[in-house]
Length: 424
Ligand code: ASP
Ligand code: MG
Image 1 (tube, protein in one colour):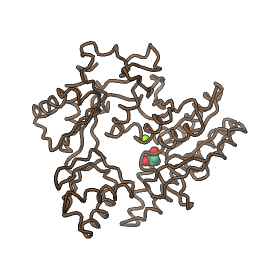
Image 2 (cartoon, protein in one colour):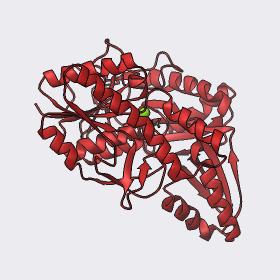
Image 3 (cartoon, protein in one colour):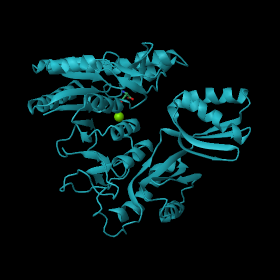
Image 4 (cartoon, helix red, strand yellow):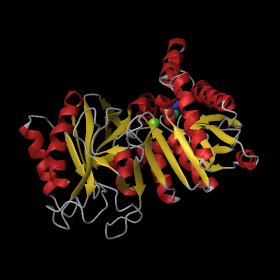
């Protein structure tokens, strides 16, 4: 049996008991004959607490020092997990991102992985050790410690699986896998045993929250076999597998017994073969609507140039004439303001505003551009519930609208009710 990469999120390592439970899982996988690279997140809410602590000390903490601070969170869990394994007589060695040779771009707080050297990891695996790697961090070419952005440990795990040629990559979290909506908001949400990469990317980008979007992009590109599983429950052990679907939309490698598979062409008997299909409904409260008035429409490139060089993500950009609208991560709001103010001074931007009141709600699925029925039904459904909508746009794989923040859950509920009842 080959190499397995397992990643354990913050809740999975939140307490000493849970760390022991993770050590047991690792021990079982090792007993089954696997060699293991294990990626960990910081314990529980450690990252949030460290951020709050930084803001008690400084109004505007320097990004470099934030990275120094936040990487400590993962360093704590990797060492404790390694100790818990030692307790079981299992030889394990923990490594920081830098020690693992995870080379990133220099942008603090949102660095991208350029390549992974991994020599020390390979050497430790060769000597039979379980390798533990601190998630969400790396080192720049100038030897500065960097972080990959919130939720980035998933991306560490998939990048390691791709580099080390792992058999598969298992992301352990506190839910059973991927649902058609957040089950805390929509209790009847549908569980997917398999889901195609492209739809998973859309769900992740639009706030599904279970997987870091960049991890799914990497998994698709490098054909990493990717699973999402629950580390806390003993009930659903299978989880969700992210799969490749063939051009005909059928399952490439899911098991025939695999219950609900979104890619299966036999699914959804009431639907015509070419009608749109829905994978899920999301609301993304971590995003904020940004509206920018340009001096001239020809200077739009200046805004995207700033976003690209600062590695700020831009979701669902929409522009007409002199106005640009898009969703930005709320945590990047201060950075955006700094850059947009500079663009005002440079004469490119007239004004900008952050619309805190609106969040994106998205329906992710397929064939939306072939069949505009969904577009029409979204607006009708929201109107029936008197939920106002300020903007909307569609692509082949998703339709999104912006709804008031305090009505977002309700919007997800009514849209899920409308679309999922028909889709599965
Ligand atoms: N600990 C980091 C965060 O909370 C990274 C991660 O959990 O993936 O964002
Ligand atoms: Mg996460």
